[in-house]
Amino acid sequence: MREASDPPVIRRTLSQVFHGENLPPQPPMEVIRVGDLRDADLFLAVDLVASLTGASTPDEVKSGAESLLRELARKVRLRAEDSEKTNVALALPEKKHLEEVKGRWTDWVWKRVAYDGNPAPDFDGWVRDLTALADAIRGEGVRVTFMAGESGSVLEDMGYEVVRVDIERALPKLGYPRDPSVAWFEQPILMNMALDIRRGEEEVARAFFQREGLAPVFRPRWWRNGEVLVRAKAEGGNFILVEGDKPALFTGIGVRGSNVAALKLIHDFLASKGLDVEVYGVPLPGYIKDWRTGAVHLDVVMMHAGPVTFVSPGRMGFYSLVKYGDTLEIVELGQVFRELGIEVDEITAEGSEITMVNGLNLGNGKIVVDSFNRDANRYLEREWGLDLIEVSIPQIEAGGGGARCATREFYK
View (spheres, rainbow, N blue to C red):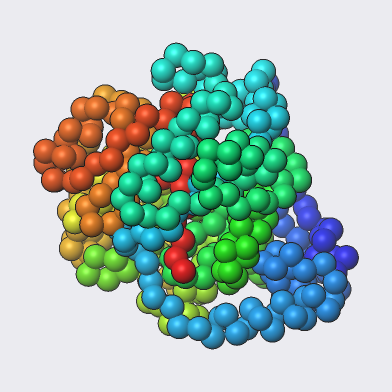
């Protein structure tokens, strides 16, 4: 338990090779030497159970392991990106945490001014954006629930359903609940955030799901590679599950992209559930100093809308993907989508590079999108007949996300 709570991690940062001062945050590379642990297999087991259940004593780990084994034995139904949504969660950051961003915009990778001209971040603006999203989603017959801490009283006074969670540290980007979890079936999977400033959001997601009666069943944590354990980097906004003629999982490879540890652990977990899902890595542009031109997650360069997937070829390694299997193989994107039976299209309109293809797919051709991208939205309607629900979300966009980033669907 002591090793699981305080493991002997070796951290390597990129600051030693990147020139400049006041650089945007870069994720560390973290490993544990197997020789520094008393029992590597026991460490992996205890760490996984504790991170999924919040267990802090041996008895709690034993009980958590038993319940986890029961959950793992359950059959699952795969839910792709365009599956019909039944429950959607949003998250409200604490007002005091948003205030910490001001004066440290680069540290938090945040715009100083939103596209409506208002300063960012602004708590009242966040409330307006989130409630506008909530109203639009509820208008389509989908249950909406907020996860929030002390600031949740604002939403409760407005009549919204709120699940209170403990927020133990400053997490101003909590308003993007897409990232700390994924929901590919009823049992949630917790992620492993790359940046120090966002670690802790996974525990908030875990508490929320547990209070909804949903036990998280997996978390990509540490992958054993010879004599070292490599920490997985996995964030929900970086995964898009597509079914087509067969299931395929796409994930971004970049500054905060999925590393080999994450690919290995997720691939093997899905296989253990009897799911034959091919996993593809998509190269993304990163950043050293100018984070505005980078793309940290796949869902700001790719959107699956059902019969068509929209991409931004200038912001991704469009023609070459990395297919994960027994070996890593370079494959052609066009051939992959041909096999999936899905068309690929590009939106050639002006708008926000963050939210242009970052829409929440409710299923049945309905997508919640940022109203700021007027020309792009008209193209989606005219060319593909999609039913768009447009919402103005300037504060959410300023923090680096769109309608998909600010939501997390789940199934019960």
